[in-house]
Length: 82
Image (cartoon, rainbow, N blue to C red; front, side, top):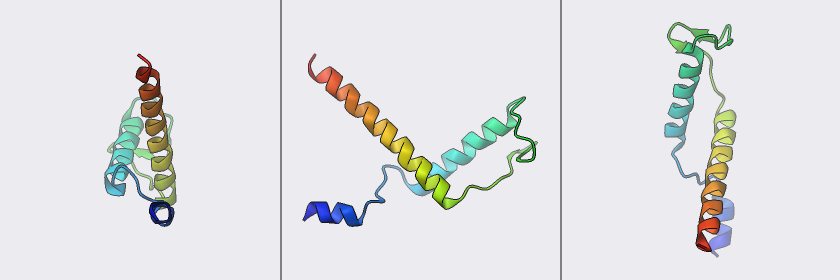
């Protein structure tokens, strides 16, 4: 029963999409305003001037959360024997 629920709701993420989108925007602004970023055309004096697609943000968030989850799992497994 529980497995079917999670298969239907597979887009459950740790962070809200809005918060992660804001984090991506902040990182893009910091990268674009960094001296010598080399992102001509997408950066302005105020930061990032481009747009992110919803699919790109979702895929990036899923990959980031999987990486963090795997790292925490490995840390737990490695410390479990100690």
